[in-house]
Length: 367
Figure 1 (cartoon, rainbow, N blue to C red):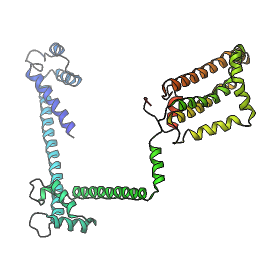
Figure 2: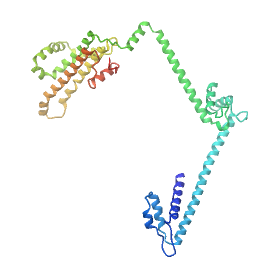
Figure 3: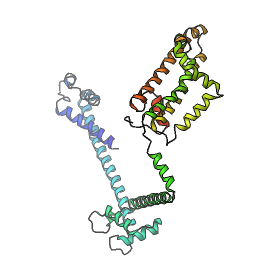
Figure 4: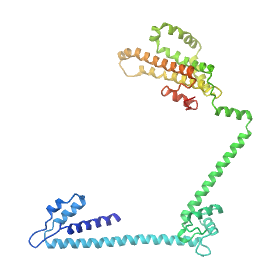
């Protein structure tokens, strides 16, 4: 409705502007001179050009008079439309005021023109079943009491908003009481625990930061598991380096001699990496060794790809060598970081961050 009124006003203003500036003129001997002057106007929008074009069309007194009559009728319709909108707004205001007055009178029991705390408390209980504390009502009244006289006049009274505020305060009070009760229950449970159990929880919450030489050396041992399993990819390279193959041979033989030896070590490392009594450095390296061992499974899927067999045969050896070299680089990085700094070797992409998360990290870089 307001948009229609605005459009009509703009149309009238456009016509008036054209007439005032001489774009709608005529004499007894020549038609309206409009075309050349209209073309010289700056582009003021498509709507103004349309109005100007229509205004330039008539060439007789009759057409001009008809156009002016139409504009007068349009002005009258706009005024009528404005009056209708104002009437509707006034009626809505009157309805709201009437509803506010009725709800106010229902709460104003003694009809003294104000609603005090007792009347508000009684009215909320009678109409909505709300049981309110005096402190809650006082807080709500202060929100709506514009003149700060401690009571509510009719222009300050809105039963819907007052009800909503009271319910919000009561919900907050219930939540606060529930949280306080849970905190008290936790304190009671903690007090009832034996001292040894409380100490164990304290130890669990405070990681063991031991990074001595013994811990550093022990943290290098778990990487023998992925190194032995990765020898299958480094067969060609180890054949060309017999000393490296001879150094790894005892570990390979020992692991293969125990039935399911690799699987047993895998689950042992996994369980001990979550042992809070072990140093954090050792726990991290146990978990990272497992992650490297798991990563060795994915290159084995290369053989399942739908690629020609001759291409697989050509690519198999360099691909296996690359996997083994990457594995050795990760292991040497972990060994060097452990022995030289005693810090977590957590810079291996994806594997380092995943290992930290598995044991409760991430941890500070300086650890």
